[in-house]
Each structure stands twice: as structure tokens, then as C-alpha cells.
Length: 317
Image (cartoon, rainbow, N blue to C red; front, top):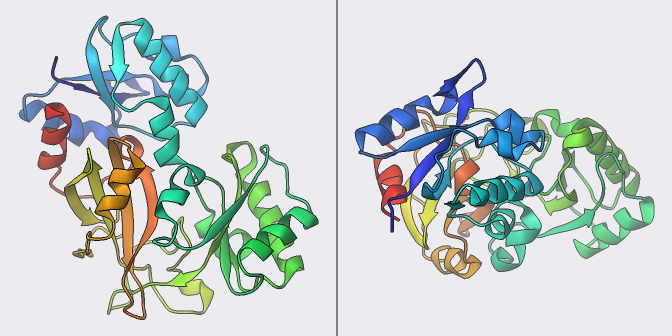
């Protein structure tokens, strides 16, 4: 079987070069003897997949993608356009959606991640009061929570569009959800998720990069429940094995060593070839929690990390 190549987004200002954000990965890949090709991310987002992949050689064979996030439907079009050129993404569209969107991975990780429930909805459609009340009841009816969609939260609008201090206050739930949907607009993915808020350990110095996260984790100093971002680890898994463990990209200087004992069998059960898990330790010392799961192709690397082992594993897969 041919050695896999890696696709990177092209620089919008110079389409013959990788996007500056991924240029260092492309350089490292070349040093490892790997091969990369460029795709037009803007064309992918616009639904013009055939145009986006025109620089990928015909009959190239197996491919990984390392780039910006794509909606699941756009990723499916990406895969179809590549298949028409005799190429194959090693993460299928179904596998991408499973790891990328919370409803795809939640059932496998339930019990190891903050309790969550969701309401499917179209972009800009705010769930009604009865739908929200039913979702709140599924989470137990009281206590703090956060709002997000299937992929992202509005963590930088913490009190306005993310954090719900008390689920029993249905009026407050409605306000936060409505503002979240308004701010997400056309970029709302899948629906509205309510996720239990949990307290995680924080750096001793109170630092840790940008506040908030996309999980149910307590990591925002504006919540009144602590200060600084929770210390998280991002673990990169290939075929059920961890190939890179590092800090979260939002706090690249806070290294941690998570316990992967309980996570490894869950990642294998998920059945996706290339995924990431963000892990944080509970503030009460009761153990590690899965903060987020993601598709490894669109998960960012922290600044300064040595990705040699990760890239070498991908081209050897």
C-alpha cells in the first residue's frame, strides 16, 4: 500500500504554499521524508470540493488531512471529490462526524465526561421553552451548566452566551441559549447542547491561557468559581494508541501527565482511527475527565510541541 500523504490548507494569498498556521507541520513532514499536497479551504467551505482538490495528484492513494475544521457535510463532499481523483481519505465521512460532533462520541464516553443532553435545531432556530425544560429535566433539573453546539461554545462570552449558573432558572436558561444561538448564527452546528459544569484543577499561579473551554468544565475566572483556565492535556490517538501527549493549545506552557487507563478502552470502542481527547483532573481529586473528543485531522497542536512522533505515525499508518 502506498505511504499516506498529508493534505494541508493552502495559503489564501499564495496558493502554492501551505497556510502559515500549518507551514511548520509541512516543513517537519518534509524533514521526515513525507509528502504533502495543498487544498483550498475556502472552496471546501463554499461547497466547491472539486475545485478545492484540483492540486491533489490523480490516483495519489491514501491521504490524511491536517487543517481547519470543516462541517461534516463539507467533509463528506471533500471525500467524494478526492475519491473521484483516485484518492482516499483515511478518515471516512462517518468517522469524521463521529469524532467531531458531540452526539457522535458521547454515548461511548458517557460517565467519563460531564453529563450532557442536546436539542437538534437548524441554524438560528432557538429551542422553545418546552424543549429547554425537557432538556433541563434530563440533566436533573438544577445546578450549573454550559451551552454549546455540537462542536463549539461561546466561551469568550461566558456569562452572556455560555454559562448557566442554575438550570432551575428556566428564564435564565432561555436567555443564555437564545443569545448563544444568535451569536453562532449560520455557524451553529447541529443543535444546542446543555452540559453539566464541573470544577477542574487550575494552575497554582492562576494562569493558563485563555479562559473557558468547549466542554462542561469549570475553567473560567468570570464564573466566580475560581481563576484561570483548567489545566488540560490533549492526547492524540492513532488506531487506539496514544502517539502524542501534550498541553492544550490554549495553555501550551502547562504540561500535565494524565492517567490514560480509563480512556484507552473508550477510544478503542469509539472505532475512529485518528482522534484527540482533551483531559482534565477534577478539582476534588476524584480523577481525570474527558473534556472533549475531536477528530485528529482538525485538532490544533500547541505552540512549541515536538510533533515528530505524531507525523511519523501518520505517514507510517
